Image (cartoon, rainbow, N blue to C red; front, side):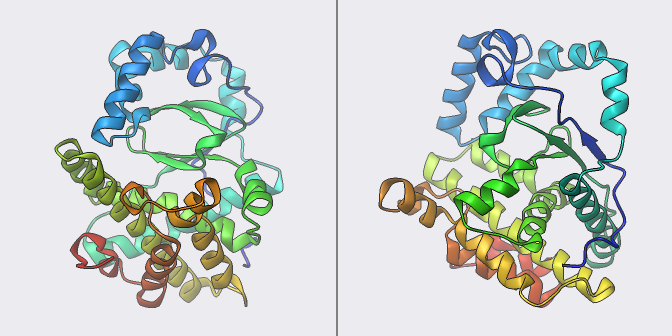
Length: 302
């Protein structure tokens, strides 16, 4: 992928080197934002029962207690300034340029195809652990999007893990991961995430998981839409790039991950979709280049 000529996003917050971890959920003393460990456990149980990401519940509780705001106000001004400095290492520059390209694509594609204006997300780069609007961010969680603060969180060490643990390599495979998380932000802009979370709260665990799969497959499809429109405009893809993305989508399918960890797959527990589903929906978006082709909720089958 010819990503070097992409525009670097200014919406990157580089927290690598700030430290992180220490205590439960990545904060000193075992609490998140001043929440007691008992409160955190209860919120995790509620999240398990309702299918809501516990990090979102914890983040909401943090906001109610004002803990997150106090930490930001007490942060070292020098640290804040460094966070706003554009990354100079290759992985940081890569992430900033891919994010910048998603901004350039979606700022045109979304209003043209849906009538909605695109408000860019921000990306937080971190190492090990950091704080998000949805609670603690830990490297073990992998990249994720937090709808409460409208940010994508990425430990760039995940790219190394993709290579070593999943045998997935190539810059476009890594770009697919970023584009998938930005796809969740597109869903948020379209008002889809809020509606799904409301439905999950009223659903049992199995149905909540099915809704989660639909959300994730749509994000895969939107990553494909980005790839198609980016390539049409900048001719950035090279031979083998699409295969890299499909390899990544296959490697992180729920069925493959469950078989690796426990020897068998339990479809009712899937939250992201099977390898076949993830590859197919990415290709749906890539072939069409149209946001409307990503409506996984209106699809009768898988």
